[in-house]
Length: 421
Image 1 (spheres, helix red, strand yellow):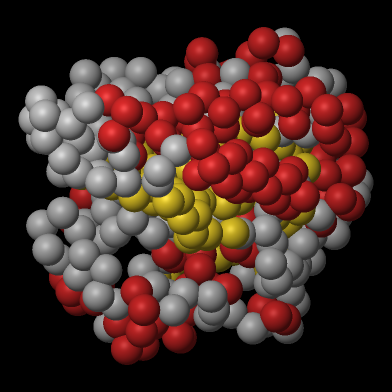
Image 2: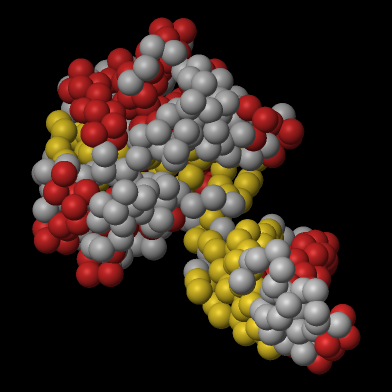
């Protein structure tokens, strides 16, 4: 299948709009920009070369369709083409190209599906521009709040509504992107792992069981601002000194829960706002932002309880008040077990090793999984690096993922006798 590897490499360059994947500054192809639109145009060109029908929906998602029967259901695959600032060229794009390559493989084998096949390039998966992720797939699922999100602004003050208009889209027609239940039967996404478990294990592909979702806290500690030179140590109400131990506590408590429960759990104190933040003034208010993620809600809530109890103990020992607000408490996404079993079986059948995994990062598939049976397939990425110019996935691994996608589409769309070897 050397010709297919060459094709994958060429098309990966094409959707990334470059002549080489080695880009010192990476890729900055944000959602609803001319750069994303240019990549989407290349997606449409490749799809048409494969004989697929293309269209753009009301949210800017790109569809490449292998339609065989107007009354038949759709089996879909795909990913996204936008990036973060100075990101890599494989996050999202690898899944889109592999999905198109799977269709190419099927067509070269003279496969005739009995169900319709769709390849989707979702719009604006990354939160880099508007600080909200997976906008295109949320619209497909009907879970994007049109009123709430219209006024979201990027770093240049451009609202999401305005960005839509700049791309020739009408924000008021966003609801038309929503699919009815009967319009989609299943969806499988291929993505780079964005971690190093596959690489370290020596396994070739990852079969994802669940996608972690965030619980986010805002911890506000209020003491009293005073003069650093004249206030005796025993009279201080230093908010920063009071809250500082909680940073270490959160790390230690997370590690302890992992050891006890043997579940994936991560927690990060990722933002600190210190007020008044002046060299000659005692901190009077400190606000911490905490991001907690797991594929199990129970462990996230256990950590929040421990944090809360520890905060109460600080209040008893120091003259400060601490409030904890829950900003987000999303339930983890469990992926379809029957699709996991099918992907695992396909790997075994074609001689590829696989590893059950959980995803710490969000993906478009997590939205579709709220309404339809869905699966997620990981390929390794070098050193686990992602969202960085050095992000890289080997062409051989892309081919392996392509073969699994092709076999999944073949089995799911109703022809069990064709060989893709």
